[in-house]
Image (cartoon, rainbow, N blue to C red; front, side, top):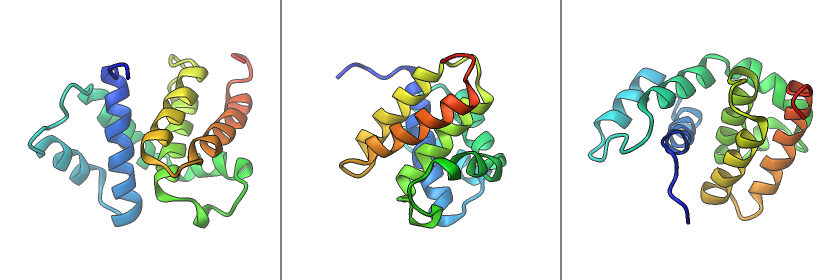
Length: 141
């Protein structure tokens, strides 16, 4: 397995933090503090990217959800929290990080779903984000 980039590690931590946010409704400030204060801290992850992703996703969660819902094959309430967190992260990067190529966004999300999600969850994540990319980044595809 290849080593994750600093941004890849930041995405991984962001999914973990977003999962907690979805389950416990922790504030981004509390989550940032918690992840910084862990014994291993943020490790090699890009701390600024982690903070930007976490606060950005939480801030824009309603709009990101509006982007995602038309592409889901089930009601939002039935989404696995891990897949939900990954989809929110992917939607945020597709909408707000145009400097990150859409294929990178989708590939990173799929890899996160393979690590954290249900056995076939990565296929669902890939399908939803691929459709969303075609909507938001049509000029790039």
